[in-house]
Image 1 (cartoon, helix red, strand yellow):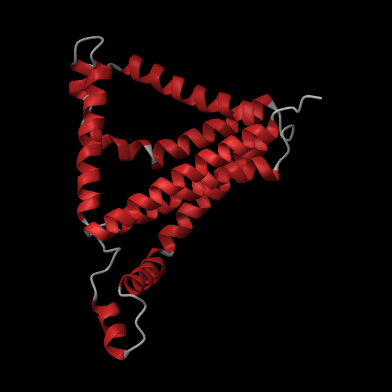
Image 2 (tube, helix red, strand yellow):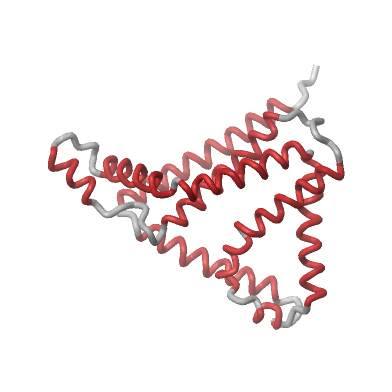
Length: 217
C-alpha cells in the first residue's frame, strides 16, 4: 500500500512537471490560461441553467427538422431534453474542456514566444495550473480506479497493466452508453463528423508543418 512519502514524491513529480511546462511556455501564457480557465469554469456553473435551456431547445428544434407550425413547435418543447439534471455537469465539464484547449492555442497567438520568460515566475504559474487541474480534472479520474488501494497493493510491475485494463473497460462502457443515446442514423452522422474532423486536423497539421519548414533556395 502506498505510504505518505511515496504520495508526497508523486505529488512533487506532478507539480514539477507542470512547473517545467510553465518555464517553457512563459508565465504570461500560463497566467492567461489560469485566469481565463478558472473564470470560465465559474461562469459556466453560474449560467448552466440558461445554457442547458438554449442547447435543449436548439437541439430538439434541429432534430425535429426545424418545424414552423404550432404542433411542431409544441413537440420541440415537449421532447426529452438533451441536457438533463443528471448529465448537466458532464456537458458543463465538456464545454470547459474545449475552452481549456482553445486557451493554449490563443495564448500562443496573443503572446510572443519570448514574452514572460522569467523562469521562476513561469514555474510558479505552471504549478498554479497544476493545482487547478488537480482539483477539476484529477478528481474526476478517481471513479476509474476506485480507491486506488488495490492498485497500490498489486505486485510490482503490474500496476501499469491494471491501469490499462481499467481504462479499456471504462472507455468501452462509456462509448457503448454514449452511442446508445443516438439512433442509427444519428450514429452514422456522428461518425462521419468525427471522420471529417480527423481528416481536417491531419490536413491542418500537414499544412502547418510545410509552412513552418524552411524553404530551400
